[in-house]
Length: 314
Image (cartoon, helix red, strand yellow):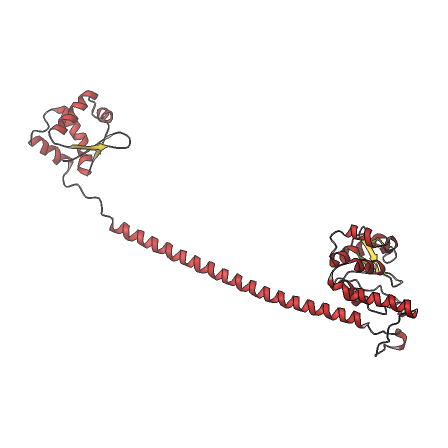
């Protein structure tokens, strides 16, 4: 509840016949902040009243429904309540001097123009009060069954219509609180379920990752190691000499350059590279390679991505 207490020092004669908090609650369906003057007059932030009554535009609502004498700025109201350092006192209640305020008459005018069903009981009671005054000349509240101390003034019973409105509002608020509690419990359960699902998914992903790692390790362990050459480059060259496959020094030089790669699996060299390493002319390297291919020392299986010929042992 955001209401401000009645100004201290208010005399017993100035006390409300109906507690202003209950009166406003029955009229607007909400607890509203207020500023109470030493005279006992109450002023309410128009934005609070209009907002709780469903008005979209507070300024427009004041222009259309509230008489000018029943509304004023909080700065004007506060001068008689907080004559010294008014700004600090108002700020403590979340109020600003420029805020528009309405008194009880202005609030009742806003209620009368409101179309919310919650306002109907209060408006019916106001209509009954007016009709009673027109018929009987006055309207009086019944004294309360229990009276305070003699020097505290007379206490009056709350009108039944106002009491019924408050009961209905409290029942509505209780149902709203219960519905909110159910919704919050369901939301919390959904959040817990989502957290459990995320945890389960993270655990599953962790297990899958572990399984993939183990599978990769097994595949790597099963990968056949590179076969060791069954013959050395020197033994390969010696075999070619014995079979008279290498007949000149130039052919032997080219064969000696290719032999280490051939015994490991394949040789991928451009003719220009062989020529640069052996010091032979390019055309002579071409002839030597043709001689090695022709005599069956090696064979060409294709070309690498860079265009270099690929040679392997037959």
